[in-house]
Image (tube, rainbow, N blue to C red; front, side):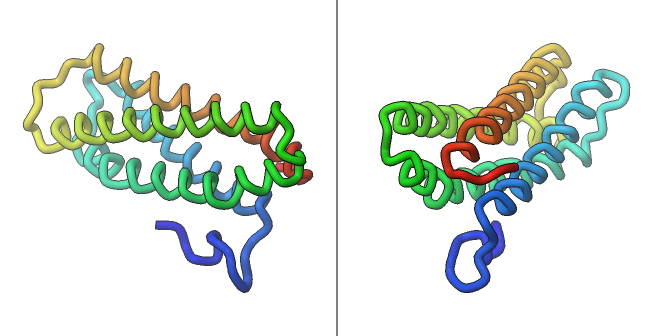
Amino acid sequence: MLPPVLYGGEGQLPISETLALLHGEKLAICDELEEIADSLPEGLDRDRCLSVSRRLEPLVQAVHVYEEQVLFPACLEAAGHAAHARELVARLKAEHIEDAEFAAELCEGLRRIGEGLAPLNVEALAYMLRGFFAGVRRHIATEREAMLSLSGTTA
């Protein structure tokens, strides 16, 4: 879980700094997922699959909580609750649902592969990995460009 300083109260980091930290965490795990995908089939590291499977879903959930409880309301407020801001927030929230479901499925698959419980379907695993990290990277790019400008901050 994220440290309390990210959620508000005394000592809270500015949104832009918090978002940069969160994006860094998500991009780092995306890099790991890409490395796993690139290592297939010969270089599959089952321990790494287990490690990522334990960290990915909690990270995605924690980031979504921060964005929905802090970032999105701040952006809406800064934009005067304009229609374009409401539409962007609605789209990003919908992406959160998709990302959370995808992360859960991916974590389960990585866990099963890491534990040797599932036969390795290289094509399916590579497709899932690449689909997930590509979507997360797009989401981050949207937040950096649109959300931070709406909130009046910079990345």
